[in-house]
Length: 180
Image 1: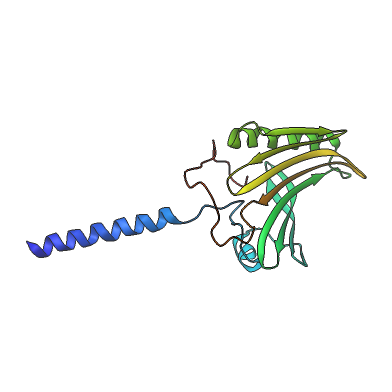
Image 2: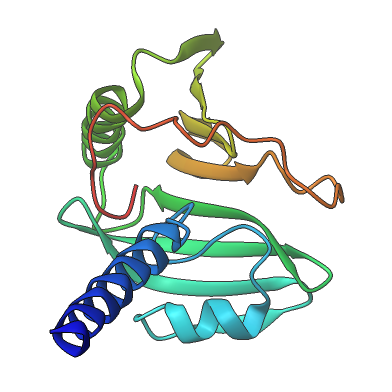
């Protein structure tokens, strides 16, 4: 009888420990990566084929996002992930209307996930900013030198070099949306 109880207790503790470890796994900050990842860790986590690597940058030219193919650039400070930017701009096959529609769709999804955001407009450039405990998110739409462009930038807010980041563990987005 004691053996059965001790085995059941052992199995229960093992299951609780496993659940605790799974729950303690940090959630990604963007896509499948977290701030502070090394370039090697980002390469391992990213499913898409890398287009190029430059000093402190990894560039992916063809990444799916909201039923479009966009560019993605990861920026590093030394060996630590600092930013990630999606970009989409006018080309021979992508019109101003396409870029504007992509921006409007992303803005709607980001509002669903993070709330209304803070809108700024300067000339033909519009930006909307959201803040989470770990990330500043900026969606920009405007006319630049060669035409219309949209950029969605994620910037680390906890990469100041502090040994222990100050975050609110109970914070959750309003809605989960993959890759955003």
